[in-house]
Image (cartoon, rainbow, N blue to C red):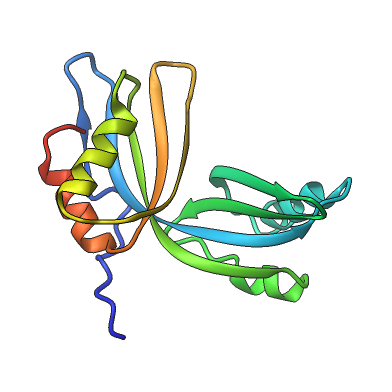
Length: 157
């Protein structure tokens, strides 16, 4: 299966809204890593990023009994696969979309609506309000190139 990958750029679309808040839509890497659910597991995992000098854009953890899946998003140009493998972690690397935008009611709805209109499936989404009026969402989709085009062309972000 030949997958068309978008050109890696720090920010495919960026600008400022009417209130001066920075907005961007960019492609990032998401690593899904399997961890044992025990004290210190996240600390040991996060230590790898410190040693490799890779900054986390976002992190999410889903715990199921004795195991967890941690999803981390990093800059598209950052590379951590080798360090994860060397340390014995099982991971899956995926391209994801990072949406940084001013916080507002209906933002998650708009993301879902734009992608639904183009019949694009969202496989993973997580995010948070950053406390200063900005929100960041990480979105993994079935067709990243089509999703980028739809989101950028929607006029909603």
